[in-house]
Length: 430
Image 1 (tube, rainbow, N blue to C red):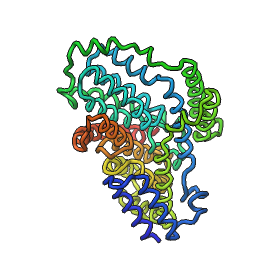
Image 2 (tube, rainbow, N blue to C red):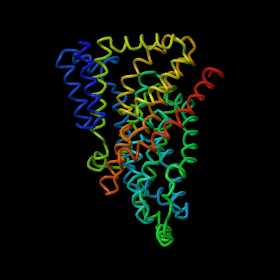
Image 3 (tube, one colour):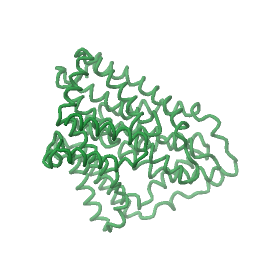
Image 4 (cartoon, helix red, strand yellow):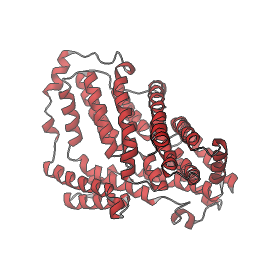
């Protein structure tokens, strides 16, 4: 059974990495195979916390997708993008910096795939008006979404998986991940002129066109915007207070989604297209395949091997997890990597007496997976989404064009994270 579980998982990984078959099809086929071969039963798949589908992750994403589906109708994202372009006086570099900052901030409070889906079309509009190539802007926004998304529990799918497996709260992510994500964004902004030099020449006449845009026209429904603002504030309050309220973030998101749909009187046809069913099904299939590895003891043996490789030293384990996670998350999608690695980190952390150092392993996994998502064009879901948008707009982004710049950003941000982890959890001890 272990051979079957490992074989199916490796085959799925290869197919996901090469993108020869849609990743949702791969995940569901792999899940079906481990069940068909008897590695997992229906009870293991649907009811077990250790080996089954993590419903908290699925429904947290579903709730947030519905909320964003209603929010999209207000036009607030278009408003913010046009406002930023005008505040930048039409300067392409200043436009890029502002869009990067907006993307990073939005990615911390929405999942990064949703953020780039909303920001990318507006970026194409602004670049068209300025008559500059949108490719550097789109790539920079992807980098910002992956770094900014690291700041909170809901910002990046790997964080959701880690929170579910580790028991870390929304507040824990704010306290421990926001500082390094903020530092990463500052460094990214400083790197932009060098990364994309030669991309900021613009015709003054085009600048005048951008300055003529009226951002207020982008707001389509002011009443709905107010309702969305109130509900989102309540949802984030629920996330922050979840430890006191004893209500899981997934439940908070679902309640928020239901309340927003009710108050906005939205019809299913208006918000359901924003639900990324392929992503949710991909997660479900992935959890089942990882559950098969847990059920057959493969994860346990890998954890034991990792503990022996680090000699039981927490600092060595933390640094190993950070750098290996950054590398492997870039080679394959960081979602399946995190799903496979979480049980291993859970076992490693149980053997560490100091709670702060035990949690450092989880933060190393989160930083490595989130920042490592920038390494290649297939490192994170947001990358794939933006490359698809660029291709449809006749401004394609090649794999190597993305990866050449992504490798630099990943190297710099991960090297920045190493001393952060060392100082915070092993020198200062908190």
